[in-house]
Image 1 (cartoon, rainbow, N blue to C red):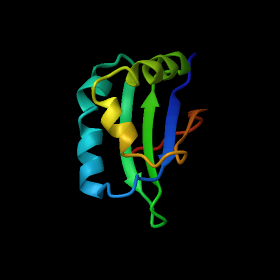
Image 2 (image 1 turned 180 degrees about the horizontal axis):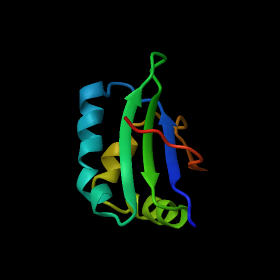
Image 3 (image 1 turned 90 degrees about the vertical axis):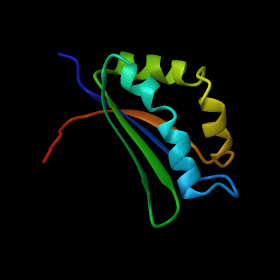
Length: 102
C-alpha cells in the first residue's frame, strides 16, 4: 500500500513582493497542479515570522517527485521563483502518517 506524501516548501518573499502579489503568482500554478494525477490537497500559509509554507499532499512519493521536477519547467515558475528570497527556500517530502479532516 502506498502512503500519501506531503511536499512542504518553506521560504521568505523577496524584497518588494507583496502578500497579494505572491498569492496571485501561486494561483497561476493551480491549473497545472490540479491536472496532475495523484494531487490530493494544497494550501499556502504565512507565519507571524514572515515565513511562508506551501503544503501539497500527493498520492505517493513517485508522484510528488515527478511533479516537483515538472513544476520547474512550467511558464509560471520563473515568476514564482523570482518572488522568493534567494537562499530562503527549503523543500522536503514527508510520508503522511496520520490525517484528520473536519
